[in-house]
Length: 103
Image (cartoon, rainbow, N blue to C red; front, side):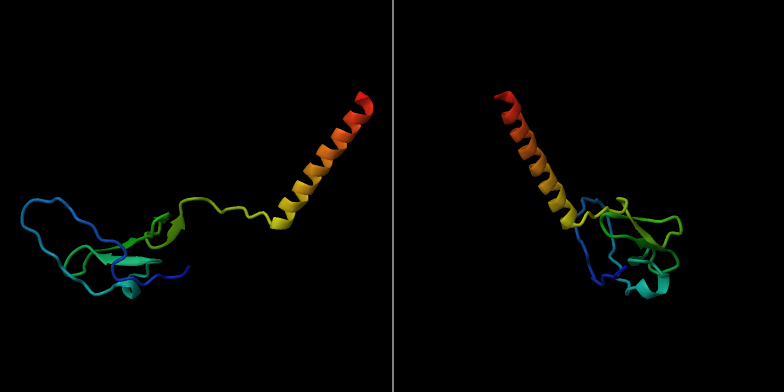
């Protein structure tokens, strides 16, 4: 898996009332052994959590990211071309036989 190193992958605005604080914590990606991103849940970095990118979920080991969809089966282009040629040949042969026997 390729690790993406972006400081802020996504930011948003929240409608939260009351006092709040923003605590900027240096990157923890190398300290947590996460596949993608490690975040501190408190200012003292006692509690951390691994995050995964969109389209992935956190595995049972709480560090690895697993794709949401199963492996995609890739069919080579040559097979698609062969299937198309066979389909066209079948249609032409069926049409020729129909014309021969329908006369």
